[in-house]
Each structure stands twice: as structure tokens, then as C-alpha cells.
Length: 153
Image (tube, rainbow, N blue to C red; front, side, top):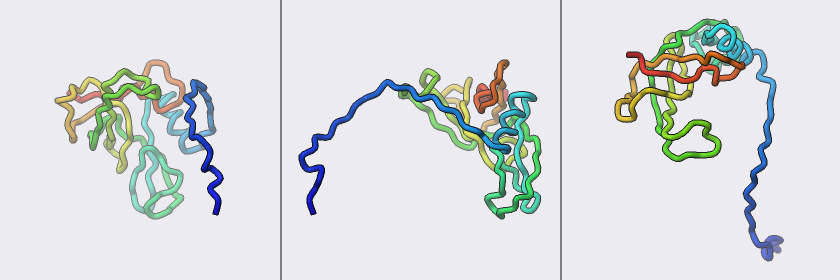
């Protein structure tokens, strides 16, 4: 078999092209984002069969595949289950490093949400600490309508 790329010199081109795009979120994610935007409420979906509450919400229960799900409000306060500290500035990171990302399980939810953690000294941040959502004053219907989570003091 002949290698058709044998005489081809590999080249890499760096691009400065920005390709913005948008997509339809669907009913489930749309309701989730609109409740944050319009009411500063974090909503989850609870399975009526296995009683698990998912945040971010799911259309169908991933455990028992039940499509009977009901909307429930969960607390904007929760527990930090895991975190990472980013120290390398990347173009895709809109905030200045160091940046802390945390997995937060909100009170009333059975799953975690990933978001920014602020005002936690890097040496003071601990798994198990309580954090609370801080909402932006101006909201547009995205997860960034929650500005960040801050330690509960």
C-alpha cells in the first residue's frame, strides 16, 4: 500500500479567526437559563420515579430513564465537592488567572454544577466548604448570569 502523504510536509497555521455561533437550547435548558435570568432562581428537574434532582436539569432521568420530571427550585447555596485552580492564562479564559473552578452540589440537588469560585484564598479553599451563588445585575440568559460562587462566611 502506498503512503499518499509520504512527500507531504506537515504544516500548522495559527489563525486569529473568531467564529461566533449560537444555538437553540431547547425547552429544558431554556427554562433553566430563563429562571436564572428573570427570577434569580436556580431550577432543577426531579424524577418522579427515583426522586433524584438534577442541576443542570435533564429532560429524561439518566438513572431510570423516566420522562416524568418535575421542576423544583433548589437553593443557591451548596457545598464545594471538588475544585481546580487554573494558573495559565489562555485566550479562551475571559478572567485573569489564577481562576478557581468548582463543582458545587446545591442544597436540594443530587448532582453538581461547574462554576467559578471567587473570594476564596487559594490556600483557604477546601472541599466541603459552603458557597453561595452571586447573580449578575444585568443578565442575558446564560450560565454566566451567575457571576460566581463565594464562600459563605
